[in-house]
Image (cartoon, rainbow, N blue to C red; front, side, top):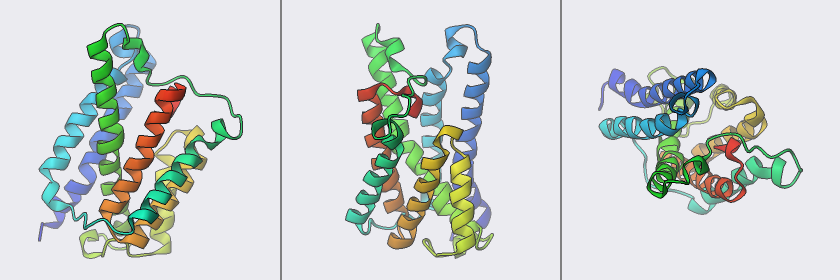
Length: 225
């Protein structure tokens, strides 16, 4: 059994690092004049991918993913969440969101452009689902029930825990995304409860993000990155 402190670090530290780098990115882009700072996402996002991925690998023995369960249900939730995210623009004619991480700024250099796309999808489909699900469902959903969260079976239901994680997950996103993020947080919690498998939660998040990433590349609505 891993110590409580190591379990805590394993579940929280990747998210703390991820958010710290995201805050640094926002700080630099808001004040940058040269390309290196004005578009800091082009180097900070790959740094997030590498550093957070390295932390996940370092602490890999602390995570209990369990086997995939109720895969059809999990995929159904993933597709439904994708639909919720794009519904305002695709179905309700909300204004498009073209401002954001725009890889076409690097199209003049093919190698740089495709390496940027590769890292962006690696971050979106692998690192983000792992970091967020380990934290939100693997840690906080159980920590609200018992501060020694590792003693709480994964997927144990508690109304306070459900509410805290759903609301916190919502506010971790930008304001325009709050309605979609609120429903997403609730549905991913349901995946945790129904499957009792962290791997299933990661799968749902990864499939949603993959579909969203492909849709972003197709529509060039970079604000959804």
